[in-house]
Length: 222
Image (cartoon, rainbow, N blue to C red; front, side, top):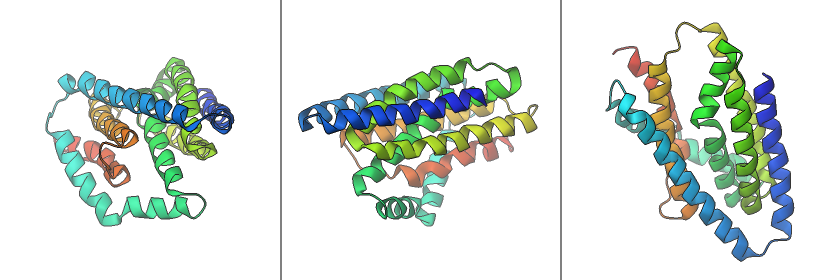
C-alpha cells in the first residue's frame, strides 16, 4: 500500500499548493489554467481510449456499458445526490471540481493498473508515477476550484486500496481483457470530464459512473 499512500499524499500536497496559488492569482490566469487543463484532460481521455480500443475483445461492449450505466445512474440520480451532498458544504463549482478530480485521479489507467501490479508483482512503479502526475494535476485543479480538491484524496485511497485488496484475493481472476475494457470506458469518462471543464457541453458524468461496472459483468457472458 506504500504506493497508494504516496499517491494520496501527493494529492493533498498539490491541493494545498494550488490553493495558495489561487489566493494570489488573477482570474485571467485561472481561466487559462483551466482551459489548459481541459485540453490536457481531453487529450488524456482520447489517448487512453484509442490506445486500448484495438485490443478490445468486444468492440461494442463500451457502447453497451455507457448506455446501461447511464440509464442506471440516471435512475439512481447519482449526479443530483452527489451535487446535493457537496453543495451542503460548498458551492456548485466545488461539486464540479470534486467530480472532475475523482475521475482524473481514480479512472486513469495507472490508477487501475498500479494497485494490481503492486498486489501481484510488488511493483510500485505505476503508483509512484501516477502520484507525481496527480500532484501536478491537483495543483492545477486546486488553483481553479480551491481546497475542495483535497477531498479527492481519501476517495483515491479507498479506490486504490479496494483494487489492491481485490487483486490480492482474486489474483487468478483478473485478466488483461478486463483491464482493457475498463480502460476504454474510463478513457471516455475522462474525455467527458475535459469537455465539462472547457464548457463545451454539460455531461452528467456521475450518472455515467455505473458504466464501469458493466464490463466485468459483460465479460462473464463472452
